[in-house]
Length: 397
Image (cartoon, rainbow, N blue to C red; front, side, top):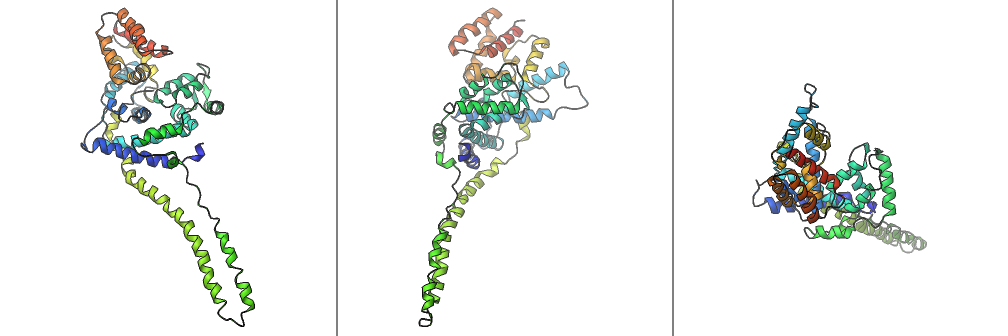
């Protein structure tokens, strides 16, 4: 299936749609900016918004990696704690202008179409990343960025043994076998295309590789060449006869050449124009301020390694916190919003604010395990619930 569709056409569509959506949003106010919640609801297609956030995380990881220095101990507990607090604070100050946001949006649109077209490539790029080895827990953690066909990828991860480190190639091979055994479990491309078409017209055919031009008409010129043979016998009587076939021969070759060349030149030209219309904004580098943008989720960076490490450090050495909101890290906040509150940012904030007003740990924990768990139907969410309960222990320690 993946060989049938063009990645270049997905990218071109992503650039056009991103330019259109950004023109609509930023046109009336060119200096406007987007914060985190605005990014998560920028388009009606949630998967696009999530992939924008994932790219912010990648940028953030690269920026944080540059903070490492041979002159300082970045692994010291107090340094790690300070960096965690810095990231938590900064993550609430996302500020994206159009020049920084538009290329992220274009890529997210293209990647969303890619999930529907080629699940294996999406698994490799969006879940595995560049890791040489991986565990089921790490893959499950990366699922926070997937909304499209999430159950399909979750089904594969559930087949992996917990706590076992697996080689990248082995995981890809197993996923390929899983996909072959479950060919109808991934999303139908037509459904995804229909959602995008509501924003900017798109059809499945628009994404297909262009068929090679048919050059079979060239042999039609062959019958024209034998024509001079019978004329040659009458050459002594009709001297003009040879000239007639000579004049007829060039058109017989020129005529087929025209229809063959037209598809070749006319098809790429619109593509080049549409790409040129949007490639300039898409190529604009991220602003210096993007260093401060939130990757509202996932591992923190080369410096902090993983959010789990920071969380463990917080549990062991961080002082008692007065505000649950301040204690929740970037990674945890995005996990809670996506996994516990169905992606609803405001519902998450309402629940956390209410927890901050409760007088005791017992009352707060009952609110989590009874009220919230019932309201949102928390099934198989133990990992995330336990993280929230541990934060409550810190608050009421």
